[in-house]
Each structure stands twice: as structure tokens, then as C-alpha cells.
Length: 163
Image (cartoon, rainbow, N blue to C red; front, side, top):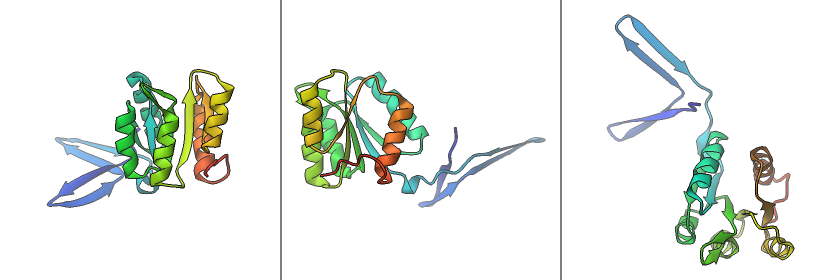
């Protein structure tokens, strides 16, 4: 799905939602729905499994979000300085965990919304995530459910859990 593209000429950038290619006797025009990416929420997605990270990143970008992916705690810690609107993180990240990212992220942005995902059901982990103001999800996470949750959180109609 093409949602738009940019061209740059002599340092000036232009946004487009239409491609026209004229060739010898052939004209091809591609029209696409325009998504205003400039107003889209910025999501930092942290998952130590590269294949899962790539799949989730692609799905969220397809839904219209700006997504930065990180496969390690250190990469995610650095990416938090870009002040995302939403942090979605796995709990287990090597020697560190996603809850430590929540603490660091909130130090930079007290309004940071957080979703913590884990493949290990644990009531104490759920309580700890909620204590840090994060929404807790157990894997496997359904894409439709995740997208609804993100939308609700970003529009203030869902469990924002900000503290």
C-alpha cells in the first residue's frame, strides 16, 4: 500500500499522493490514499526477536504510525531520547527488562504511554507493570486487539495508564 512519497529538489522537499509516469505511448498513473504521517503518533517498539520486531513494525507502519524498532535495551534506551508518544516493549530484554525502559522513558517524558508484552504469564509481573502505569498484554498478541488498544490510548478513550 502506497500512502505517499516525497521528492527533494535543490534542498526543497515536496509531499505527493500521486505518481504519473509517462513513457512512449504509455501513461501510468497510480493514485493512493493519503495518510497524514506528520500527525501520526510516534511509537518505539522494542522486541528482542528480530523477525517479530520486523513483522510488528511493518504492521504498525501500515496502520499509519511512525515506528522506530529496537532489538536491545541499549538501542531502546537511546531511541527514547526521540520522545515517542507510545512505548511498546517486551519484558525480557537480555540482562534488562522492559519495565526498566518504562522508568527511563518516563524520566524523559512523564506522559509516555506504555504497553508491556510478555510471553510469560505472571500475576506479579502484571501488577508491577500496572504499578509503573503500563498496560500489560500476554503474547501472543492479536494485531486487531493491539491496534484498537493503541488507538484508544492515543485518543484518550482507553486505558492510558499514564502516571
